[in-house]
Image 1 (cartoon, rainbow over the protein chains, first blue to last red):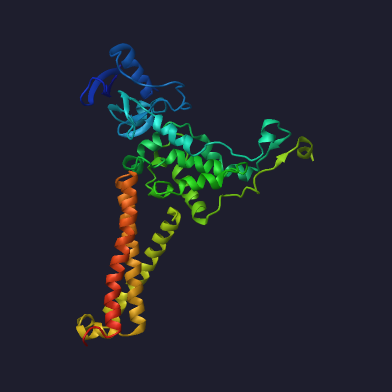
Image 2: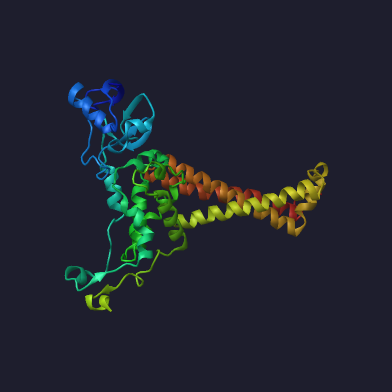
Amino acid sequence: MKELRLVVQKFDPFSDAAPRLVEYAVPRREGMTVLDALLYARDYVDHSIGLRFSCRQASCGSCGMKINGRPRLACYTQVDELGAEKVVAQPLDNFAIIKDLVTDLGSFFQRHREVTPRLVRDDAQEQDHPTGEYLMKPEELSRVLQFTYCIKCGLCTSSCPTVATDERFPGPQALAQAYRYTADVRDQGGAERMAELDGTHGIWRCHFAGSCSYVCPKGVDPALGIQLLKRHVMSGRPPHSKDDATKVWKPAEKQQ
Amino acid sequence: MKESRLMLLQYSTAVLAVVLVAIHLVMQGIATPYSTAISYATILSIYRTWFYAIFLEALLVVVLVHGFNGVRIILHEWRQTAPWSRWVDLGTVVAIVATVAFGSRTVILAVFGGVAG
């Protein structure tokens, strides 16, 4: 059986002075993912390898790491597709290392929370005691659909050159989600959200490198979302006004 | 001022700067032969024509606003502390006002005869 040379960057901030690369020999098989290789190395060679994973099907975003120099999901990357004899697994850039391949995503999720990633509505009474539904037309859904596919894996933020230098920049994931909710016709919180993002370290610090869109494993285009958000901020108008927000459709109206 | 307004200023001054510099190069390199364009007498006569004086003043303001605003953006990305941000914003305004005033002084002196012909 062919062997795969798996190189893992190991680093424990509590005991190590600097990261080091450790090479493992892993039996290679057809269809093997990088996560499979890492789990083999951890289970049979070195129990101390630190890695995070969960769903194994590119849904949870837990196993984001730098594989052969590019941010990818380990469960979604087959060894064969890399076309290399050696696979190098390193932790994501722009995040603090907890141990080996496990990074601290706390600041990432904090930035996500700060853009109010939910539908904001004035009709609290309707939400507490619903009498109908908030409907969207297909064309309205298509404006935001791709951005709903975000799994918050952090690959885009890891690849962003602005995040690397500006710690107050929200990052592509948070900004794309800001667009996702602001452009949603059911949302009424666009003006408040955009006021927050129109600051010195807000959307204007994106230089459109596009690396976020290049590395997204779900095909989301965060760079596009940020440019659309810039357009709306520059014009001073959200994608739709509060008055344009979807009204509640009663079941009886829907049938007509 | 909102960052979007400052970025609008940055983009519009960039476009204006390209147009004004192009006109300036045409005037200095094609309309007037380059060998005589930078002679003392030619330059003074340019300053003393109202159209050119206004044009040069506009070029001065546009290029300085664009340049210093660009430096402000770079400095904001370099460090992110609140005191740094305040000093950068203040320094940008001071730098623009001071350099525009100094450049305008030359134009005004030339236009109103403060410079010997």
